[in-house]
Length: 479
Ligand SMILES: Cc1ncc(COP(=O)(O)O)c(C=O)c1O
Image (tube, rainbow, N blue to C red; front, top):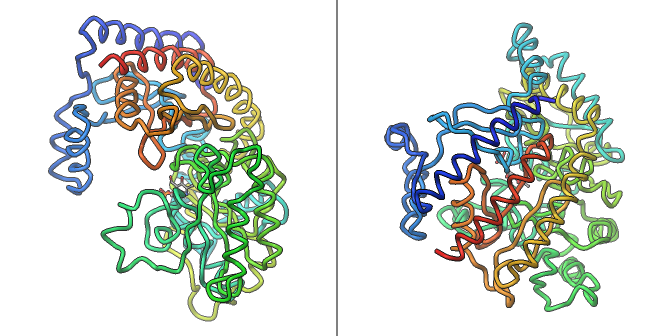
């Protein structure tokens, strides 16, 4: 337990009294402004600052960013000292809680030994220990990993692995998928065209984007009862084409559950059928578990839900719970085609397998297994999804779906005929922030309210969250 029960209750009380002040002010006050925001505008890429100004222009919601300064367990504090419950684990990273003392200790011990090594040239002992544990935890015979820093880099590595293993260079990826924004990863990312538009001339156009298994909005007009995996049949049809088909496609890349695309959960059996389809057609399956991995969906990896083993898996985020470390891990068959280094490694980087990252990842994976965090996520998530479904029944005109797995859950704000309610979703997210809960919108129209809290989040925080969400929906519908 990172925080004592009494400390949690005290913080929730502080948040509740802030909510009362907020109500008393007629839902008007903004507690987050700090001079740091103006200072930031002078030293940060204008694109990021302009994004906030545009948000205000488009939605009429004034929204200075919260400047974070401290975290503990499931709580974050802003620069003014106000506490918040972190319902997103800061992009699904802080699974073990912010400033987890065991992770701090692991970092501290490693920092006193060796803070930086020599990548792939002279590996560190702690990297060996970590990779051994990762290979044990990974499904099936996934056993050879190449480490990097960000999720996007892990995706780039996976793409190179697939290309090298098959001698083919095309990819099939999904609409609304998110795999990162570096050039290679961007070419397979399907989410939000805006990401690609300014760079279109440089982004590789060797990817075919196909509809994902989004049963609520089936691109093939099917109902779940007669779906017959029409979206997979579409992929199979593409793979049979004489040009751009299986002879050219190295791999299909998929998130087992789409994260930024709106927490879209494919129907049961879909992932297994995708695996079989890839095998049948001689193309590799890359699963991007950067968001879903390490307990988030109630299993260590989301592919374990269907006993599926991909050829390559991308990992990041909760692998350390705090430190930029990512991995692409593959089967021996895939890696057998990776050429032996002659003079230079063909894919490496200065910080590859940084010892601090490996040490903290090693400890994170120990906590994950020792405290059975996937089971905790499953149990808390079952309760919370039930509460989301109750909200859907209460607000049927504006909540079209409540869904998710483990602690990766969402409600989709849309009319009964599925018109996305983006303004309402953004207003609710903002209302929640004023009530002391940090969460983010997702989905192709930013109309989905998503949560991915630390897996260790106490039940009391979830109960307070549900109550605040109900109030925020009600207030937002009135405004
Ligand atoms: C599924 C998935 N893949 C890749 C990425 C990119 O990771 P990063 O932002 O660390 O590059 C993300 C980030 O949200 C993600 O959710």
